[in-house]
Image 1 (tube, helix red, strand yellow):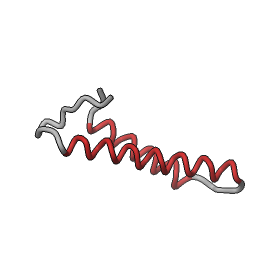
Image 2 (tube, rainbow, N blue to C red):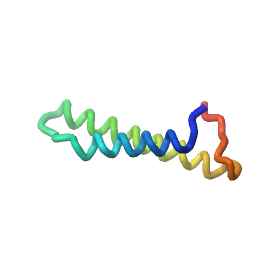
Image 3 (spheres, one colour):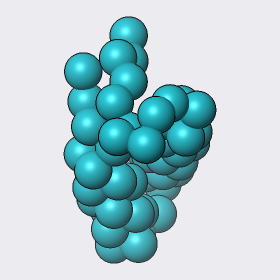
Image 4 (cartoon, rainbow, N blue to C red):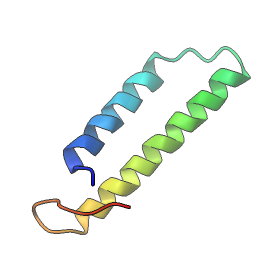
Length: 61
C-alpha cells in the first residue's frame, strides 16, 4: 500500500528529474519518455484515491 502523500512526492521527484534533463541523444529521449509515462501512471494512481473515502486510504495492487 502506498499513501497519497507518497504518490505526490514521487510526482514531484519525477518532475524535478524531467526539468533537469538535457536531451542529447536517443538514449536521453527514451529516458524522458519513460519518466513521462511514469508520471502519467502515478497520476492515474492518485485518481484512484479520489474514488475512495476522505481518509485517502486505498489498497493499490
